[in-house]
Picture 1 (cartoon, one colour):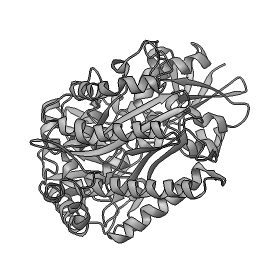
Picture 2 (cartoon, one colour):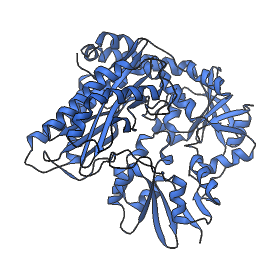
Picture 3 (cartoon, helix red, strand yellow):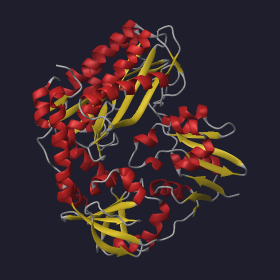
Picture 4 (cartoon, one colour):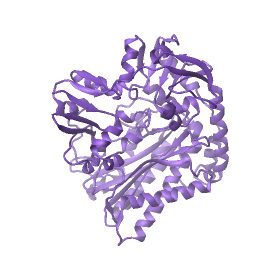
Length: 547
């Protein structure tokens, strides 16, 4: 019997339960490619099964009863053999379906479709109809001018706070120092031989329209970027009026619109574009290649243009965590849940936002709050109890910040841990000092991700004896077994082009932003610390450190 695989998040959540949907972490983090990391549902022989990444698998505890689940991937823990083989997405699916044909919902992204097609026969259902598109043009100079105008106004408003941080003068100057705009994207397209980019994820299309993603989704807008041209082509399922777009006719379907450009090699978002849309393009003999790296690297390179939004988001997180910590202390004998801590956290974030004129422009990116006893995985806060008796309570928090027009300009990824034991708390604080005083200053332009990771591991060596004494390092292992990342670059999402991991040869550049981190999961203890940085010509400086 043919298995049917559902990929659309609304259909998946309808079958697996809304509570599970609320506790998924990664679909919201991967804003440019949510369906490439979200669970899928398989219906076969009257049974319902789910395939979930291990990183999101803690949410399965609130899944609809009777549904079975398979997981893929692996998340770092000291309690596990990290050298063991890792189950892939396709392997997890085939474990449920066997080698028979799978009928996949046409919304499945091309990246996942190709994985499954390589593992056995695949068909599609719910194919979309081809439709006429409205075509518009937008000058890139108009978009760049809007970025700078809003950025400069927000930088002036937030400069008094930034001046009070460590390296405050340098950070204030850096907030308005650069206007890289689309130029790095032109260079990357030339480097990869792309004559055009077809951009479909609303998160990225924002950058090519000047419109918020909610508007882009409502109108069904995608973007066609031609390097070195002064205008950007916009394709819309609906007519757009009054937003500064110049009408450029209509196209008889997407394939016709792309063929009309004359571009030979077109980059596209393989981890976002629905297979049902992609296959007719491939049949039209368009040469399409994955452009995920180009888009991420470009946004990494221009993230420093919008530094003010990242500094604001990171420090707003710290204000929120401080308020949540105070609530826990005041209610040491009371009954609190993870969601209680998150509610107070967001109240403090809003107070901070009001003070500097960012009210109504800050929203949650992710709220990862849980005790080490509940899980060592990065789980979104739920209705689970927390108290001062928990050995550790991890906060790994992200905020999104929009400009005055509602376009997302920056985000944060900051972690702290509340530790019940004074010695573990002291270790947490030492790890944080290492990040800010040793690892961040060691980051230089030109360093690879693996070089930064090596420095991060070296910084842990003086702690090895204490880690072992506190039971935080398994017998026979040392800090060289820390194979988790020590941080990454950051742009409008945390999914970027450089991760501080062994084997990563991509390099850091001046003007990039990012986070350094240590996450230490073992037993019922989960310590997490994460701080933000800006890479300057002479080295990186933190933007989450007080003077």
